[in-house]
Image 1 (spheres, one colour):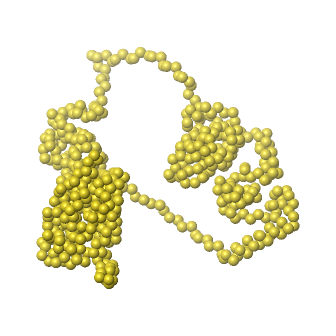
Image 2 (tube, helix red, strand yellow):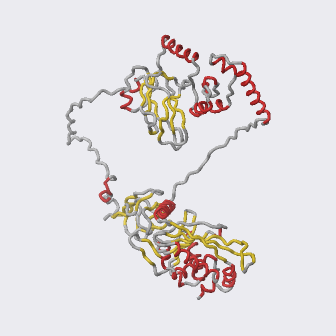
Image 3 (cartoon, helix red, strand yellow):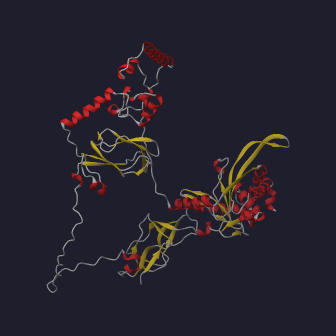
Length: 566
C-alpha cells in the first residue's frame, strides 16, 4: 500500500526545509534505510533516509525548492499503484480520458443550442477614442505613490506634448510630470494635495468634446489621436501669445522647472527675462542662478524707460560681478567619469532565512541592554602557556572564557535563566552555546554541563564541534538546549562589539580581542593585555546590577585563573 513521505522536523527551530538533492528518482526501488534525499535545514544540510520499502512513485518537490515541515514531498508504494488519492487537494489526479466514438457506441448528442444572454452594453474599442490617459509615472526607484503638488493646467486648457502638466511630490523630491500628448485637458483625476499610486490615471488629454467614460471604466491607455489644428485655431493661439509678449510681467506660462520657479520667486526674477538652456528652451536651476538683470531687459522688456542713475547702478553691479569672477580664478571643468553599475544576486539559503527570522524576533521582542567590562588577561596568558605544556590538547583563550562563564553562571543563576512568556525558568544545569561561523551563516553547538568539565575536555569538544560545523556533520542534538551563549570575534582583531541574544537564553557574551595597551598598576603606567567583553541581556529577566555582578565574577576568575581549577 502506498505511503506518503513528509518533510521531517530535523531541528527544534525548523519550519521548512530545502531539497538540496534527490538520491532516488521516480521508478527507483527504495529500501528502508536508503538515502532518499539531502535536506537543507536552518542549521545544516542533513541526510534524509527512507523508512519504507517499495518503489518511489511520486516526487513532489524539485531540487532547490522549499517545503514546510509535514508537507508531502514523495510517495512510496507498489509499482503501478494508484497514489493520487493520497495527495492533498487532488490536483495531481489524472485528467479523464476522452472516449472516442465507436461503431457500437454512438457519439454523444450535440448539446442543445442555448440563447446567449444579452450583453449589458456593447463593447467599446478604446483605441478608437481620440484621447489618451496620463498615468502617475514612476519617478524614482523607490516611489510607490506621488502627491499632486500643483496642476499647471485646468480642464479645458490646450496642452502641448512638452508641457509640464503638474508638479508631483515623490519620496525623493518635487518633480514635473510631462504628458507627452497634444490636445485639450479633458479630465483631472487627482486634486492638488492628494496622492495617487504609481500607474493610476491622473489625467486625460484628447480632442475637445470626446466622451472619456469608456477610458475611465476600462482604465487602459489609448493611443494618441492627434487633434486637427484648423487655421482659425492657430489664429486663436497666436492672439494669446501676443498678449503674453505685451504683458511679460506674468511668467506663469513660461516653461521652467519647479525648483527654478521657486528660486526666481525668492530672488524676484521675472522668468520672461531668463533664457532657458534645457530642451525646448525650458528654464532650469542653473539658468536662474546665473541670471544677471541688465538695463536692456529692465527697460525694453517691461516697456518702461529706466532712469540714468538706475542704468549706471546696473552697469556697476555687472562690472563688479565680472571683477569678482576674475579674482576667483579659472573655472575647473572635470571630464565626465563613466562607470558601470554591476551586482550579483544569490538566492537566500534556508539557514540564512532562519537566522534572519530568529535574530529579528530576538532583537525586536527581547528588550536588550548591554554591559561592557575590561579584563586584564596578563595572568591568563601566563597560566595558559603553562597549561599547554602539559595539556593533551591546546587550550585557547576562548576555552578559558567558557570555563570562567560556566563557573560564574552557577553563582549567578538569574543569568542562566530563560524567558518563557508567563514564567521564568532558572536552569540549574549549565549548557554553553559556542557561536561558530560557517559559509552559510552561524551555528551554535552546545558544550553541555560545562561547569563540571576540565579545560582540556572543553577545548577538545569545541574543536570537534568546529570541524563538524564546517563539514556540515552537526546533528540537531549538537545545537539544542543552550542556557547561555558566547560569541568570540577576538581572533579577527575586533576591539569591541555587541551580540544579539540567542533566545530563549537570557544573555549572550561578546568577546573581543586582547589588546596590548598602557595600563596603570600600582601608580605606574605599564604595558597591559586588555580584553573587552560585552554582555547582552534580556531586561525581562536580568537587571543591570545582576549583569554587572556576573561580569565582575568572570573578570575575577580570568584575572586569577588558578581559581578555575578549584
